[in-house]
Image (cartoon, rainbow, N blue to C red; front, side, top):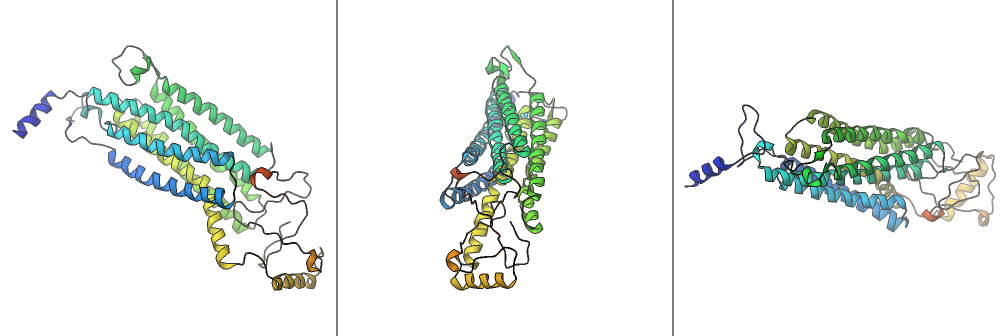
Length: 383
């Protein structure tokens, strides 16, 4: 009886599209991308949540500062979670299955949720990239409207214009809009494959630009060579984003013109998720470094120097006859506790420049005195 029922169901099944030669429709046990989506989501959500929690703790509770960059990161985190949720809905509504294994009604459901996911992707990848660029402005471009700051700001404007316009086009890709999901409805549509390819190319180019932007600026920081390389390594971790976007762009090109959209389009979503997550990790990674370094300092070093340490430092300075005399009276000594974090460390403007770092609203203390910081290690002075 069960065999007869299954055979009857198979005989009444009408696929959305005819299978290619040599392929047979299999509606009962179709090939699916659901397992890939589950793996992607299972990695993405814990990773972005852990990194966001660490960043939130460092910024809100330790540094007690919250700026535009932090709001962008928060929106990006919420957006990635929403994107993963919608991507899961795509798979539940027969996305990631071949067009000859599903009915026209099932293809309509998959198309609807894919359209929602593609719109969300454009919005939240924009917030992710903006948060990275805002981080660059704060760390590498303290001088407002410097050449680097101008480039970063121009990139932000370009990305806002591109992603907002493409999101609107995706929402209105067919007139009437219902034709997006049901091609039997009379109307007109744009070339969706061309739109996806253009979006993939733009993502790839901007990801590589964002990767290369901090390299020159990081090398000009007043740090020793080892720390400069570590700073560059932190931001080079963002190489994952352009790699994923490049693979996603290649996948888009390969799928161009394919009518099996219920299979090809969800596959593109997976690579988009990987790109969003890697970009999000980049903007959170510096704060992870701050937390690690802070814990290490607490474990190995006293929070404040002792009297004996101050006296020993004064005697050593006098014996070396440094060019700048330090007052011998301990009442004249001033102790500055400076954050030696790799990325959010001390930044001193050149002595010939009239500009200084002005961020009092962000918790930055502006010191007008010229000071000399000398390490007990054999390193260059930072002035």
